[in-house]
Amino acid sequence: MSDKLFSTRDEPLASEDLDVCRRVHEALCHELQIDRSGEKAARLGALIIELYRQGVHDETQLRLLAGGKRA
Image (cartoon, rainbow, N blue to C red; front, side, top):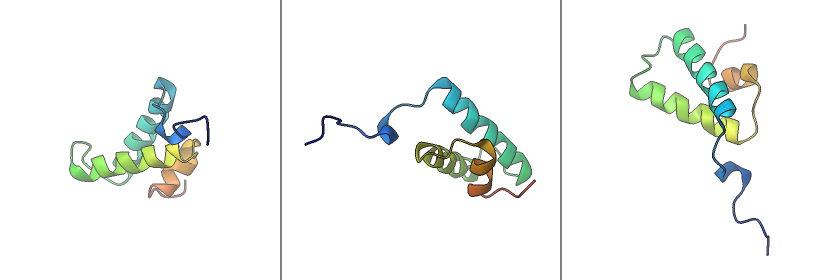
């Protein structure tokens, strides 16, 4: 049996992690013309956080995987 009860995906995100996710979210909402207070923005935020937890920490890669366009 593993000594580790939780995977790294279960650990809380640090302030720096949330800053990355926030920047990507704001950029994508602007790029895709999504109202940041709407349901679509909430789903986009959840997707960005899930991708980040899966190990995608590069902002460009996060943006592309979450539906953004190539620069």
